[in-house]
Amino acid sequence: MSAVGPFPWHAAQWQRVAAARNAGRLPHSLLLAGPAGLGKAAFARRLSDALVCTQAAESGDACGACPACRLSRAGSHPDQHVLAPEEPGKMIRIDAVRELTTKSVLAAQAGGYRVFILDPAEQMNRAAANALLKTLEEPVSRSVLILVSSHPDRLPATIRSRCQTIKFTLPSADQVRACLQGRAEPSEFDELLAVSGGSPLRALQALEQGWIGEGRRLILELTALRQRKTNPLQIVEEWEKRPLTLVFDGLKRCVSDLVRLASGMAQGAIYHPGLRADLQSLGRGIDLQKLFLFNDELLQIERDAARNLNVQMMFEHIANLWLQITRPGGQ
Ligand SMILES: [Zn+2]
Image (tube, rainbow, N blue to C red; front, top):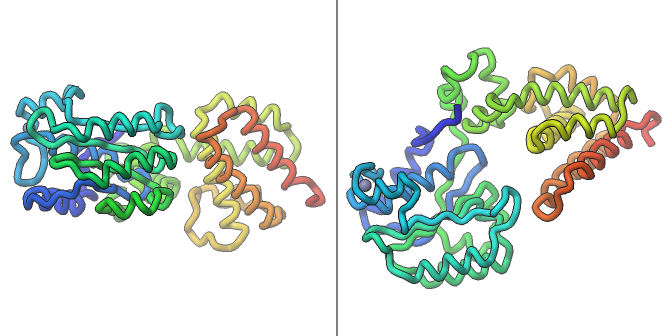
């Protein structure tokens, strides 16, 4: 079900990079920046394949047939490197960056470019970022560093300024619908567009993982908790049975919708337009400031998750907080 590139909404960015390469002006460091769910990692991979290929086409793509392409398809090309956190949400280690900087001073082994992908680039701590800066300051010929980031604002300015930024933006709603064509019922398209925030790959993920059904379930659970028909322990037990990100991201979307509805900013711009009435009755009478606090707390938990992830404690905290802000009498 997951889609693979090349994606039609990458056309302009690809042309720009291909033209730079054909003109011999490819920068040493590129930053692929833009919202999640646009396939930036697939773009980085496509570029990496093209750069190690020894017979790349005029369009900039790898030929797919030369010995270098065969190696990269098997995942064993010696000049292709990907740096990522060991676990999602964790930081990229300084050792890994040091290893990369050592490798980058050596010439490419197979005659093409040497390519390094850092994804997600913002998951670098300061020490790792400083080590990387050294590499960027001593550009080695035929070596290309590709930073991928959905939160480029979290990258040190010193890193950003040394990269040429390739911006990715949300495609039109019609392009997202085209991506869903044949995968979802046309009647579901608009809700999938809303729940994914207009991002095509997220829309596919939403379909695959059932984000809309999860939203419905969370609203029922939060309603039961608000009405004291269940307790935090029972809710946490239920949440722990489901994938962590499904529940956590689902909670973030629901609470964001509650805030937008309560503050009157939600004319059509919520994640769950199909559940608007349920959300309205769930949030009725809750102080807007408390909803804002709850929303901030979820975002804070997300930021802390890289360091500390005791799922049960985190869920208990969230359920208890909900209980607090929905306490009858409002205290
Ligand atoms: Zn090739």
